[in-house]
Length: 168
Image 1 (cartoon, one colour):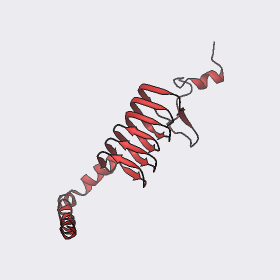
Image 2 (cartoon, rainbow, N blue to C red):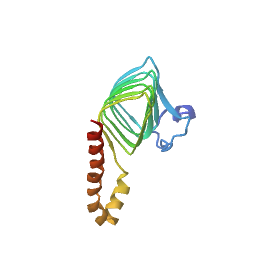
Image 3 (cartoon, rainbow, N blue to C red):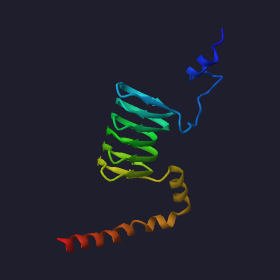
Image 4 (cartoon, one colour):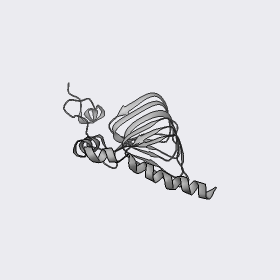
């Protein structure tokens, strides 16, 4: 017996209908205000959280949005993360982290791009790194300039130190 079309759409593991790699702007899963999830959440689609998640979240190709009512106590790995609620845990983004004015994050961040609005709370370390492919190319094509780069930060530290002494 073959499943009906409506039954097929419920199962993402159906070999005749593989899961889509791209998610449209209106397509995302939602965890409602009254829901609490403890454990591991993983997938490739986007996720909007107004409830609570405890554990780990891995959305390799998706966007994770923590809504104003959302609360996450988890380590997060996603393409893009937008925080309007509260997050406790480390975040690793392959593209971008956006902390809105009403959002808060307590944890360490590794991302390519970051945006923190006025009023947002960020407590932890931030590491902004270039894409791995870009880094590999720049190391192969610019071997000599890379050795000269460490001298630049040393020259920029002196004006800061002078300004700190002048301000004291």
